[in-house]
Image (cartoon, each protein chain N blue to C red):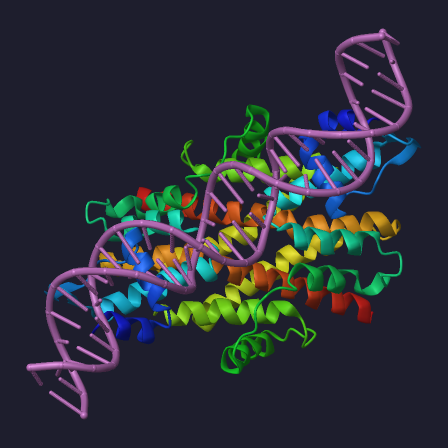
Length: 203
Length: 203
DNA sequence: GGTTCTGGATAGTGTCACTATCCAAGTTTG
DNA sequence: CAAACTTGGATAGTGACACTATCCAGAACC
């Protein structure tokens, strides 16, 4: 497949395909001559994945880069596939002050969740909690508990659906499950809010 | 309070406070002379809200504008406070093709959720589902059902925590609950994934 | 043999969220 | 009272980001 066909197939403008090649988000095709290269289905898939991560997942290209590096890394230990994906997805989360982190850890301890102390999402949690407090609407522990139960339900189906046989497929599933299912969950939450709200209004 | 004090109090650079005033994200202070104005606690609160929405909620300033307009609109009907907030939060979601929308509606119908056909989150859901399918990992209905149950749990505590007496406070709660609790839920989901993953590895 | 397409290089665009500078008018301080 | 500072308002500049456009010389198809 020529680069122009790749562009058409994937629905990505040619100029953008070239840009992704330059940025290393897409592997070069196999050169068939000095001025020609051929691309295959794998390139189409990769291109679609990049677009999905950017447009639906809201990732920036630097994050996409990290994710793709993880996908393509054959050295990545099978057992910490998820941790690797998470680290690469939240690498750029800014530092938070110790008090906020302690508050987040207190919740995690209450929930009985053992997570790696370097897990970047501890910081995300801490930031979110601190922000709610800062605007005068602190999150109460009972609310956290409900959110946590919901999160646990979701996490269980997420991990259950990861194939155990094919490593490459598992890796891809983890990434897609983590990134592309987020808007899914958020959309469902807002729709559920609308549903519950309508239900309440009817009574 | 002078503008320079407001900047210090809120932790926002003076140049940025001026910028927000220009953009209409912050109400002008009450002029005490031709070259002086005074600001109060309400300005500090508003400034903190704007920063939280931007930094933690990831909203762009145009969306913050919409949200603040809703917060400040005394005409807004009490009963559809949530709908108004949602519409303003997802106004710029691009259109999706009919097939994707139909797929999303099929799920909603199965769940028995009655939502307004103009709810912008139907489109968000449709986009997310379509993206998963496009990259070769379609979401199966059982997964959606679990996500939906989790979303419903969360939505119920969200709405239960909205005060019914103070309209202004209720409005603020809806906005904060919708926007600032999102990173909370996402962080908890990822932490839950790590927790479940560790639990599985131990066996 | 002329049009079309290639990879590679370079430069330009538009959006976004600030950030910096300047100003004349007014206020505080010594 | 004068020097130094601060004010609101206007205007312009910055830097990150994700493209998008143009140009090129050398193939390749027809």
